[in-house]
Length: 105
Image 1 (cartoon, rainbow, N blue to C red):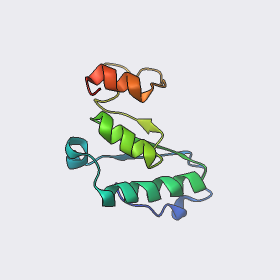
Image 2 (cartoon, rainbow, N blue to C red):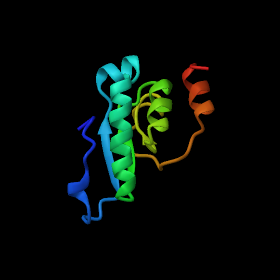
Image 3 (cartoon, rainbow, N blue to C red):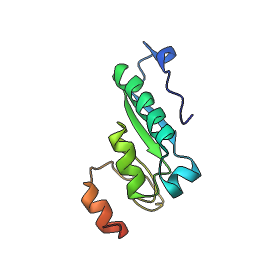
């Protein structure tokens, strides 16, 4: 759940990836200060558990940039690429490439 930051109950379960979805409003308007803080706390908890984080519904480069600053490592959404019939291999893209591909800069 977006904004839930206390992941201590997952300690010692061996989970190495936590994910959450951006709200429709965050996808459209960007993250509020409160959402950014909640996402940072959530990401910090995941890091304490030695787990990575991902965000779905990342529909704008601005949202990706803000979530990356908050500590999120992986993203899925229109800012990354459109729908596809089958999963593709994960790959790294610099933000400059995302901006160029989406016309955001």
